[in-house]
Length: 272
Image (cartoon, rainbow, N blue to C red; front, side, top):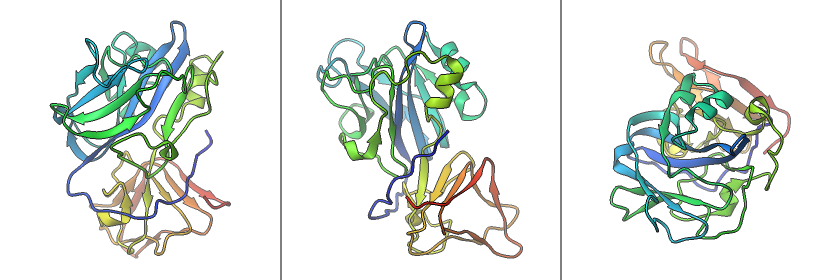
């Protein structure tokens, strides 16, 4: 699968708590339009019971109509979680499998996006919008397709189009389960190294503002002011899932220290 790299956002921030990000939405093309799914990325540790999913169906107001607000649940740390239409969980697993973070599935009938539904993550009670995907707008933008978040962006309190990318409507037509798995970038969203200092363990060096864990993808651009120096002891190594180094970016692991890349290490010849 081709990795999508975007320019580094202008600034880093430190987050004292976890973050919940909407990172993708899929309008599947298996029989019956399956699977319909929303991907969340949990940065840090979060109790999803403190949040709700709100829907704008066919351009209607957020949360309008019966069944357009759904409670979330479960405690997760540095991992992906999938909200899947409640009768399409088997179809989701037929495409993505059920191992690793693809096993983190929350079934919900509210996940019915067919290309023009918008979704928000709100705090419980609905008073604060934490993140948003699409608008109160009936325009089809991901019919038989998907939206996916740009690395290191979010969460956003409204819809910010530059923080998302899509191949356009109908781009998944005709694909079987294996074809969908190859085309849809679920699980690839990456935390971006900002390089305020060389300390891997400082949340201020990351977008979003959390230190990556074993289920987190990491992207390090060659434009960072400083590159990470790993000082973690072998008993508590620095960890990530997949690690992408752009062009002349680098990581230094000091003698006697440790880092574990649980997935793939990729060095790119070109910049972002």
